Length: 139
Image (cartoon, rainbow, N blue to C red; front, top):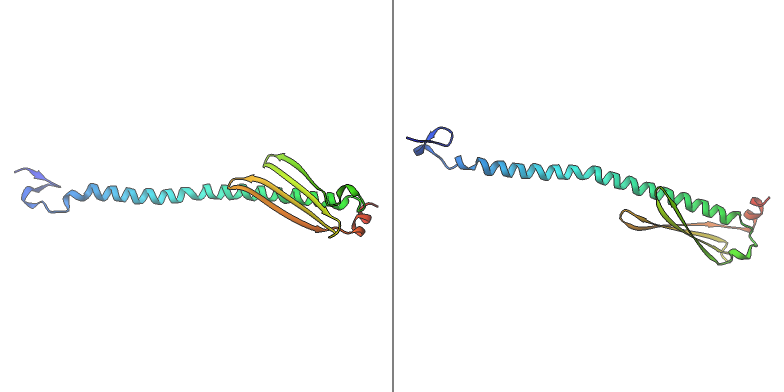
C-alpha cells in the first residue's frame, strides 16, 4: 500500500492532514500584518520629529518678528495698520512671515505659515506693544 500524509496508510488518513499548508499561509499573513504595524512606528516618529523641528523654527521666526516690531519706534507711521510679508528659507523649509502692528490696539501680530509634511501649517503670535516699551528699547 502507498503511504500518504506523514507515513500513514491511505485508510488512516484523517481530515487534518491537508491543512498544514493553509495553516502556514494564515500564520504568515498574521505575522506580516504584525510586522507591518511595527514598521510604521519609526516612520511616524520621524514624521513627528520633523513637524516639531518645523514648529520650533516657526516659533523662533515669530519671536524675532515680534522683537522687530517692538524695537521700531512707536510713532513710526510706516508700521501703522500695515501688513508686511517676508519669505524665509532655511534647512527646515520655507516660511512666510506676515507682520502687523495695530496702533489702535497696541498690538503686534505675527503669522508664520509653512508647508509641512501633512500640509500647510501656520502659527499666530501676538504681543502687546506700548509706547513705553519702544521708548525703553530705543534708548
